[in-house]
Image (cartoon, rainbow, N blue to C red; front, side, top):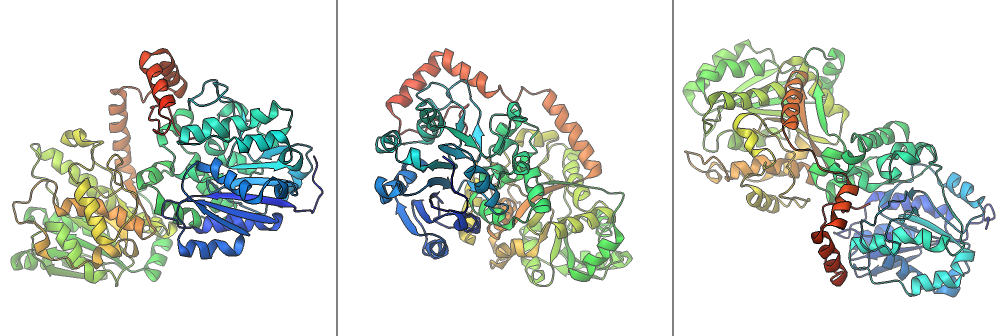
Length: 615
């Protein structure tokens, strides 16, 4: 069936789900993109929808259905179908089923509909999944995953809409109790089921030249798909499990997608940030988007640095306690640009006098030495003294002298201190490049150094929370921060509590009325204190304010990091077998057989097989 050009007799059933019931702007953008080509838009929300969400979506749709969060996308589409009835639905030339898991369009949909209207087919989509020779869901009636149109966008035309086969498909649609069933009982079989009945299909993008590159092109090769005319991209690109990306690629696809959207399209990527920072774990975002900055120490642009100084207010707040480190601290302070202000917190009048004399060598705009109570050490100084600086500056660097005395090996502790200082205050070039990075990335809220992996710290690698998940989560609750936190995922924080930050990103942490009495007396425990919770809560505070946190390294220390990680990797076991090997193991072992029996008997239990990952 070829559709008549210029006639938009279409109905769109748009499935939406959000755990908080919030409708973000990217959804409204999608609805606006569809509107000129759709006669009737039915918005089906699984679960709750906030009042503000209803207000946002209502002007762009014709019908709103809010239903229980059950049945995944399939039952949401069925709810839309049932609301119309087959007779009314049969009056439309085309029925589109689309959902919130795709973002876009990046341009008008005129070319997509023009191209597909000219094709004599019964149903179509924007992208397809290649055939997979095994059934990773355990639910496909074909016992493998056929080539199929992906269910985030399927358009069905009148001949098929009015057919008995299509009515039977939805009238007998099975109960969908978990994600595996949603894929295996609907998405993976829809295309073959109807193709076997004689209905013809196609997809918008011709991927014949890249078909053998991967199974899932829209997720693994999004830029290539956009260049081929695909108007949408996957929301999952920005938080997909990174290990799955690595099984098929080098892991750059999401970063390349964001760069392409920012530089080559008019799509407002703030819509992406608004959604993923609210709903996703920061470690997943950080990995997918490669949120790591390696900056040079031997060059910087003086003109850019000077321009930043004209527009932004910059300060260093540094806590100094050990007298034998005074000269070292002054060395790092000298890395600040001349227009910066430097605040030094000390715990005694004697230290204050010594430092005031020594600090006369600094060539900065202003130097002030401030007396503070050492209870809580650098963390209390940062929050209590730093609170008065939040409205005065745009960018602040916080640092402190560091000895890590709890370690048996003093050189190991010194290495941690060197790692912190030399990645945030190595010299003027590095500082200038950090300021440029903050200016160029308006969503960047905090820059700190990665978790140390040398000496005794190696034992803690992968256990970055140590004993601090519960107290950090409680602190976040107390601060009114409600973003995803997961004890199994690393906090993207500044380990060692030395970092650069945008004041707007951490304002909520500093607005709390901190007192020295909030911190334990000396001797300070080595873990599980409020100070350790504060160290880990910072990136979640930034995330709650709409900013991401990232790791920064100087070029010199990036060289060291590469050597260290390569050394460790060569001595470790492989990352893991590919999916098809894991599937083979499940098939041929008794354990795998029993798993299949169990999940068939109890389909309401979400499957947890290692090889199973969302498509």
